[in-house]
Image (cartoon, rainbow, N blue to C red):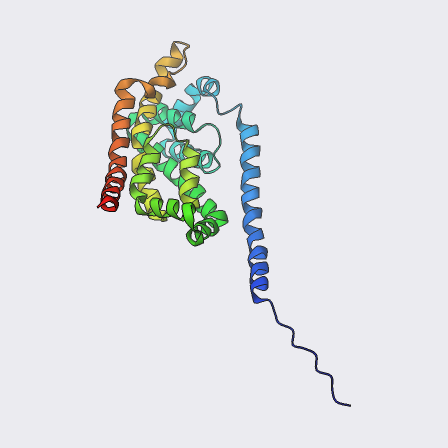
Length: 259
């Protein structure tokens, strides 16, 4: 008897590759889920501690500890600030004010900007590792409007990154996540974050530096200060300066298409 020959079975390499990608993606989603869960738990457990009342009640102890152990206070403060930003916890504004309260406007603003940049960079890397690389690649392969949006962001990365940092209307966590999801280079994110948050951070740090007198009078700090014309107009001017290259490039492109 001659052996029966069964038709060769074709392996679906695309399907196998797709399955492998889906399987390998599970650890990423699991870690992102764990980060989100930890952020939620921290927000619930720490909400009574990250308040102005808590800062006012403990201000003398904080000052005494700072005077006795400056480096330890700085490291603890920076660590808490980094965690708040990295997990997008409520309390970033309070942390900035506390930096001014403990360390004065300067070097407090330097400590605040550095800690905020480290925390933002951690969130950026986590988002890019979990979802950003895939989403950026998918946008790159897509056509039509999606591809044009991605191309527009890529052509104006420096200006766009500075713009979203300078505009007060853009939430801080949004400015941390969006660049990761569109494939922005890490070094550009770090540079524009550090420099772009200086104006707003300087305002809140200076408010924090005066908290001692505010608490002594039994008052609360005026956080609406940033929207006063003498503060908001220079920030909006910097935003317009950051947007200028984008506007000029758009006008130049429109002019070329009409010729």
